Length: 110
Length: 121
Image (cartoon, each protein chain N blue to C red):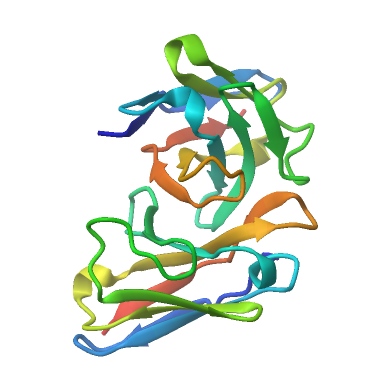
């Protein structure tokens, strides 16, 4: 059971938009920055979004992040088949004094 | 270019000890926290712990405290994850990560390629 809650799967057609939610509490998302990671099949995860809504160099603006209260959302527009991957949210949990991840969401581009 | 290069796959028996490594390059190794993340077969990511090579300050997730040891040798820019007595449930891919700022709460901006550890009798 992960500290952060994500939907197990989402799907959408190519060219469409999808959002992935990440729900937590005041001890984690509510008072800390959220980051998002993309894990393509058979590869190591990669940073997509940090500090709630910032994109590292090289990440296209099709990817966006937002946070409100104790929830965060990853948005992906202009979906491509190459976006099919597992997506994870992560943050610090002040009660645990440790980092935590969501359980991951599998994106299928139909 | 920042790189984290991990040691190769390992196959061990239950009860054996193991130490895997992660060599950082392309940045000041002593100025960033280094962490370890576990991914069990077909499962999600788990935050294990982090170390600040500059002063060896180490923090563990409660789930991993006492189960593993994280260390670093700053003279060779290498971090380690070790077990004294492996269990079958330690079978997983272990990723080395760099935290993106001096804060221990920071995101992971660089990831190693992963080390597959298989524990089987």
